[in-house]
Length: 82
Image (cartoon, rainbow, N blue to C red; front, top):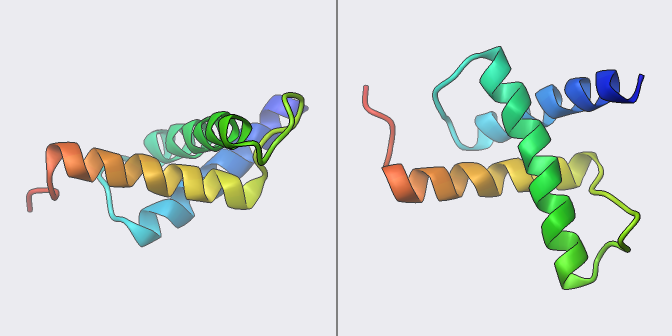
């Protein structure tokens, strides 16, 4: 059941992040973006000292992590072509 909620929360976090910074991709890319955002926020938060080693980022952290991933993506590849 944990994986199901990780996918649902990942999709919602990715969708909100894509509202902030538009990016190409469909539902699968949005879900992966949200899950990767949560993993990135957990990793970064543990390195900075915001989270203990057994803690992970929650919904807001997943959104912030996904937005950071999209910002890095846009900085490297530039704006999307229309």
